[in-house]
Picture 1 (tube, each protein chain N blue to C red):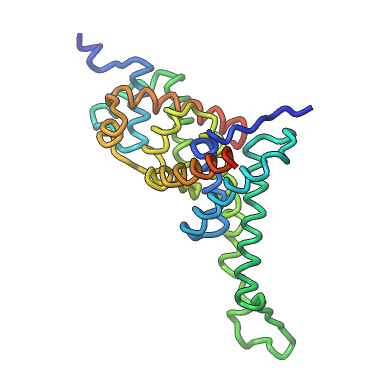
Picture 2: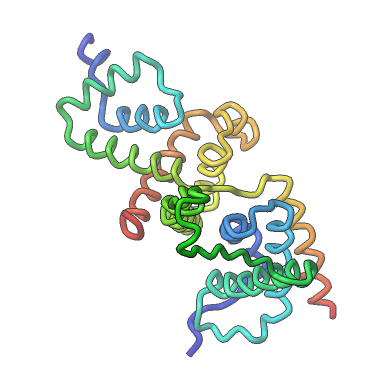
Length: 183
Length: 87
């Protein structure tokens, strides 16, 4: 029995940032990431009839995006003609030479942290998507985009005290959500 | 009168704490918050949670689409949606 329904009218406002954040941590190119998010929405529209309702809208869109990302890397590799694989072989004779190749890669130590931080970013985006539209908008402008209070107030036509009330509610909801899903 | 001047409510303390996360609390506000922090366990709990949230946000590589980018995306998507409805 299908539990979830698709409402494409809300996709852009609800899932753009989540999908974009997911992509940018894997692609590292803003323009490509934007294109992939757009392609994901288009592909979603095209294959709406295949949606069985077993997964949430967001999970379903993410599964499409994952394929898009894989396709993107395949395309890059096929353009190059071959994947670049570099292997360093260490033999007994090498001992003492090229010491830098034997030293632990400093980036390796932080690889785990990087993955964890990316997962944290996704958890934060997930929690943000649960906020009301107004709260999410103000929270995003203030916290992620780092806009100053006056600019936000002018843009959204709200007072400063109104802004801080929205921020307070958003932060409380975010802390609750992260406490349940992350901390 | 003096007491009200220096001692703030829990709600006020929380608002100052929020402002402080964005570097927008004044020194006087911070002083009042610190005073409340000394004797109010609810404020202490809120400050701790709020700081933890800020630390997490600063630690995570968060990025988002700008308003113009979002509008452009919405426009393209609406076109596609219309096409789909007609086709």
